[in-house]
Length: 202
Image (cartoon, rainbow, N blue to C red; front, side, top):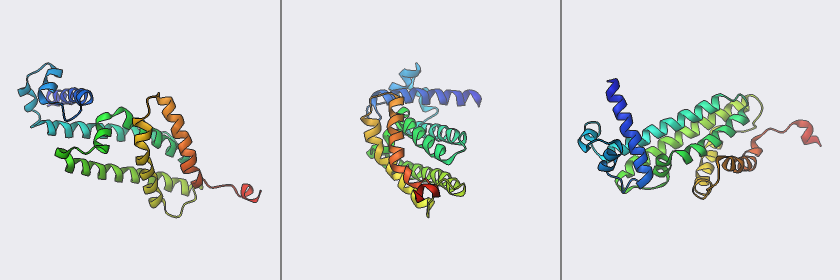
């Protein structure tokens, strides 16, 4: 069982490289087999089709991105820092996980149902994560919000709108991306930070 799992993971790793290199439409099972140095029949022992492999790659990348985001968020105590690291890790994760990012923003006719399901699942999970951060911020007096869930929907929607200009057009370094996100965070999120009363009086 362990060897079977290892072989399956090697196939997915090879498929990631192939999909990143050629794109989903132009990639074939033959390409994946050649990347591994094996025959095509060995691939079909574990997967039924290119579509089956593609779905497994997306699920693997999605799980990796979610784990990376949650680990980064849990390291922070302050809700403002949690929100910031969530945004940064989300955007950098999409930048590095090309297959996931492409499936979230590109319609593949043969994969439309899977793409729609993936989008809905991802959106809802992101909304839930942000809502928890906002709830913690309200409880500690950092944020002042009447409806954290609706605000989390607005934040996730805003981030989705930033994906193309920030990632597709961005040819700079991760540091440059983080700088841009910092500025966007100031504009988007400063309004939810609770002001001190003495500042309001002045």
